[in-house]
Picture 1: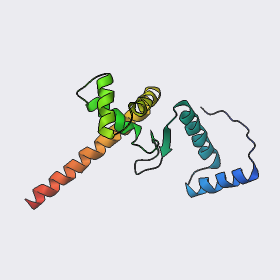
Picture 2 (picture 1 turned 120 degrees about the vertical axis):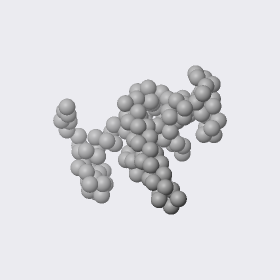
Picture 3 (picture 1 turned 135 degrees about the horizontal axis):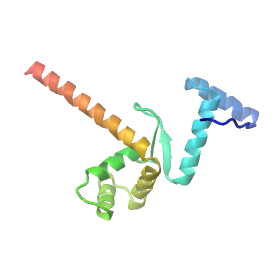
Length: 139
């Protein structure tokens, strides 16, 4: 459910918002909603940024991997607890603290990250099936 809120923007900010929304095929209010949400999340979890990609908009570490990649790596790790975090940090060449920020973000937005992991797994399965079909055809 949405609740209306009246906000006054400086003229230049509003023009930039309208222009960006138009270039992204969305509405100014939809873009403002997304930017405010992402801004709040970034403040809550310093080091988390949001970026566009083939799979859509997603959370990641600044100058680092996406959150879903780190969570998937922790899940795939044979280790548990701090050893899993240490191992993933070493694997991605990241400080342990940055991995912990990603895991804290996951704790707050698990359903979102789980959906990204599932989408990646589906894409990988489809790519494998396509490769296998090609190999079978060429064999």
